[in-house]
Image (cartoon, rainbow, N blue to C red; front, side):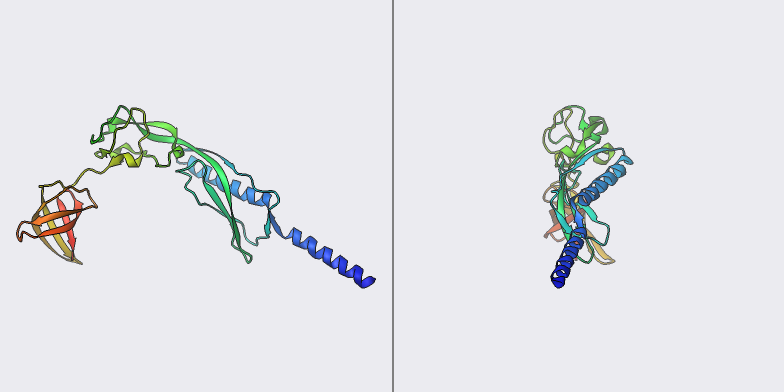
Length: 233
């Protein structure tokens, strides 16, 4: 009888210790909230106002006790979504991870068009103005520096007051069909230059076919600057 009572007491003691050695839903929710708060404070220094609310964590959840502070990170980009997800993870001896949803609203300056813009029009600073908007409401991202996009071309018509997103603009062609260009063939510190003629249009970073005016050969080259192309050797 005494042995039976002892075993029962030991079983209850073990069960109680097991329940106590858990990471609770409250702790997980608090870790997510702390991460969102830190994010909001960081963005406030840059002039953005962040409102947030972590999603509900099932109160019945109970994961292994973590012997390290819980690690939290965004798994979705909060600048491109109002509902980014968070990964809460334990990196201790008994690792685990789980995901928590969140509502995040980032209010701050963004570029909008001062008037209707036509396709192919070149951007100048006077065509843009800064307005406070919910910048993460657009999955396409936003632009904030008018000087950085000056000289770029409008890819498709933009209405007055519309948010300027990166996909609406394109870098102008640095080389156009018929342009005379400098062709540089480079290998390490050694390079050879010759004159050529572009057989198409391309912007910096793109490839274009060029005719070497000396050899009459056609080669594919990378556009590195207006009027300059490069062929790796």
